[in-house]
Length: 300
Image 1 (cartoon, rainbow, N blue to C red):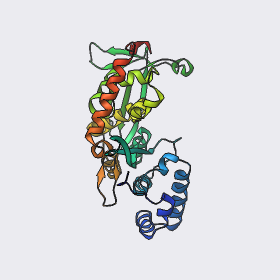
Image 2 (image 1 turned 45 degrees about the vertical axis):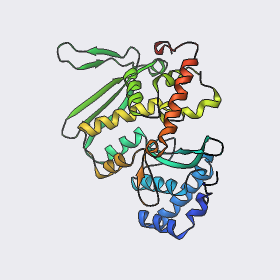
Image 3 (image 1 turned 90 degrees about the vertical axis):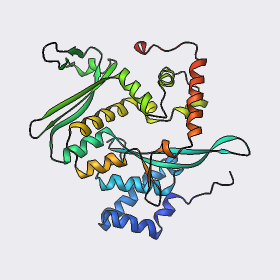
Image 4 (image 1 turned 45 degrees about the horizontal axis):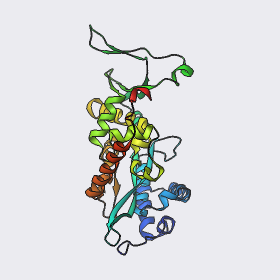
């Protein structure tokens, strides 16, 4: 497209005075800054999708993770830099094409746990998947939810996930837990995530999506549903009943966003063309209509 410009590579931008100053002012210690540059440069060099991202969005997301003292290692799962494509219609071909790709900072549920623990206010905090047969119901006397968890992990890992449980205990003895069934979490994502559609998810997990249509299902809610569900449970628990440190507040505000060079923050769905979102939704609905049979979630 004629109005799309080619941006310098990330490693080239890292050597510019503006980026060096940004890194130095955020990190401070020269040795730590050197390690940061080497680490993020290596991460981008080994990730083709990140190489396509606007350099500033990569750096700003990585610096946020560094400021929060969180690791970008996928194995640790503290946070992720996830490429999101902004598309616009080519007037010559009348087709949607990628205008730019931005690296979005997504805090993992393990990142939330780390930040909570470091605040010094929590005796315990965690979130777990609840497996089939573990949820008993609500106690008729106390009204509290009751669970009976498997003690044999080998037996437990093969059971189907039916829900998610998050809990916290503060140093003052206050305790709170939240439980949501997987079906309710699917409905939650369907309502609050513009990129997620319940019927589309049923097709996705049933393996009924064509390879050529997979770009419509790139949302983390499709690709990593259980991790997003656990993160959602922790966010709700902490925001309603937890104690939030300054770092936690910053993480809440910046989660699922990317920044432009003016310091403005955006959610991917808010900057994408609304017509593109409508198009994706309509295409997924058509996928559902063409499916030979609707998937019974209880059979998966």
